[in-house]
Length: 322
Image (cartoon, rainbow, N blue to C red):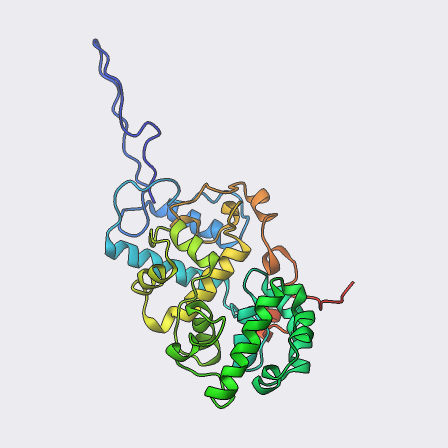
């Protein structure tokens, strides 16, 4: 988004002489407004390597004018393409081997990290590998296993309840339809779309806290209700891209575009971001804010995909690791 003049274009007239007229900057908003080729190239090259010095985004600051619908769609899709290059290995960060494990793990991920869930579920699934097993479980024993995830009593009721419904109403199989999934205890639209997209290959947008924060920060929508955000963002992209889009946005939010202190100076899409400057813009300082594999730290999965390992990612440690 192009920057306006520091005074907003208003100057005080003098009675005896005219104020000099300032020339308009050629660097303006990405996606509809013209941008200096040299500025755009420098910004993109600098942003490609997080933390690279000398990268000044062309889209920093406030919008100089309202963005058209066409420009918004183009900018949003370009952001997704850029993030796909930065995170080609993006994947659901919950360990799972089948739809049942994924739906349980996603329910358990509420109010905690995927890492803590991944460290907890191995013991749960070793003892209760099927819906029928978990449906017949002693709640106190399940609570003890789930204690590290927080809210373990409510989560125990949910996972036992959904297991009973799967066993009694769905033949022990996780259904592949949204309208059936949301009937399960503890399963809302967000959880349902995680399962549909990653266990059944059916497109869906996962509107978690990271997704909500970033799409508003990028001015894709001003909605605050998750269902309205889902509809607004979904309208910007082909349905076939929804699941991967969710991964790209969430990964970027966890690693670079943090809630309290975004690493703006190490951001690969800084030239496209209207909120550039809300976080640390110094490349060296911003680089220190990067998390997980971008900062050289372990990821959240104990058993991540090979593509993630090939890209330099490291598995998370088990729960009892020193």
